[in-house]
Length: 338
Image (cartoon, rainbow, N blue to C red; front, side):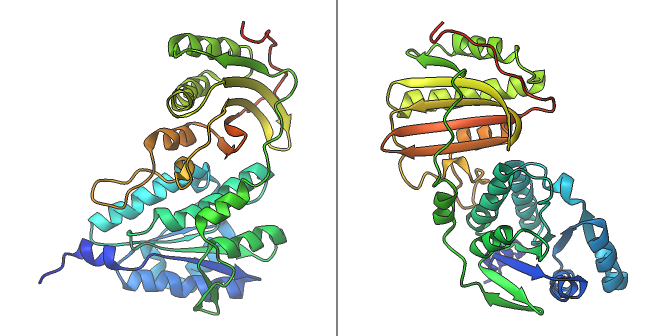
């Protein structure tokens, strides 16, 4: 039987490897063989790294560097859900061409808030599920200069670790969904006392969008982000009305804390989400590939800076955050239900 090149790629094993390094030599010992193997195999080879690492790699690769595409980390790692979607799309495109994606990607950890770091660590975990069936090969360098907790988390999210050019099973790796549960173990901070609060009693989405628009216009939220907010809130409220339990409560406020200035909107209800739903963390897949999660909440993740979900015996909360470039100020107050 003749096997197509795309079928061959799909049958190849997906790999996700951690490359801890302390200095240029350890970085090159793991990265260079990884890139050369991809070039020899006809892969699409990408390296997402800083200028210093790019210079080191080009020098070590020699003429072979012409076959490697280089990208800058701050633009590549601009948004967790969008980066995951773009990277997965590139992996799928490579399969259609009978090739595979080989990516050396060093996440941009500097200057990120604790909340942003947590979301990127979550992406490192769930991509082990999202990339199954793509045949892609990912390697993530982690410098010894990073905070110890960042490197420790990487050992939980990568099935393999590279040592001196050898790939070894990582004993610290845990199931991606178990890791996500760990990320969500801490309860969300309580909304501030001045948060705008509305109990939603009927499915009047036109009036709801007008209400949210009116509040958002009195905050520093830009017009384009306000449009994204309205789509996201409509999806989350619709989901709560279809699958949750009353009362359904909408709260909005602005804040400027450890997570940075943000417009925050949350929808809470008394229902509990079924386990194994994925909370929209994995993008839907094209026909003929492994099934992804429901598009609605995944779209919400694309629209917002961060989406936090908590569910349990006390009900469910979906909290949407949209970053503000300007310092946030206290949102306008309004009596409940007005």
